[in-house]
Length: 67
Length: 141
Image 1 (cartoon, rainbow over the protein chains, first blue to last red):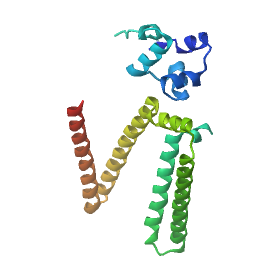
Image 2 (image 1 turned 30 degrees about the vertical axis):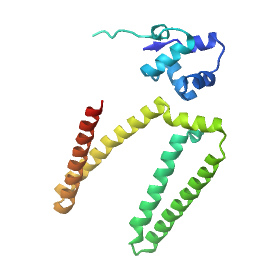
Image 3 (image 1 turned 90 degrees about the horizontal axis):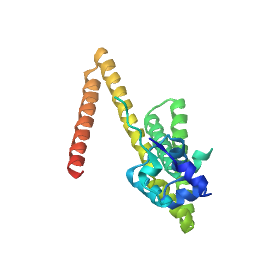
Image 4 (image 1 turned 45 degrees about the vertical axis):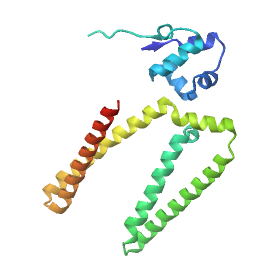
């Protein structure tokens, strides 16, 4: 799973700390999400998507696993 | 050293240090040699240092601004922090099991039934406790 958090955040000119404050997580969590080292829970994905005024699918890009 | 600012990690470290210090003190307090007495004293000093550190932290906590308090609360409830804690505990569980199994085999080979029976009981009790917890959580979720 990839995401557009860094891209959307930069477009809105907000810092990682500000986004972290808005969605009630630590800045380290935002850093890990942006670098793809950590996948958000459904609740956090929902909070982030709501913050950007988008749907979860527009922020988080799910790639189907090939068998 | 940004990890030192992580409150959850600070708590883990102080807990480990106090346990280590107390263990050293308890283990070596029954010994008779001068070296063991020194180690015991070092352990005791470590416990005192950790206690003072904790008291200082409690004092600092009381002086926190509402913003700092909110930040500290967030660090504890942060889902990534909790995921890391869960994984650390799971990995520790497997490591403990491996160490206990190796020790069990060693004492079995050395023919010390009192010790390997004790280790066996500990292993079985741990597994039973884990299964019980799992059953209880399965009911809950």
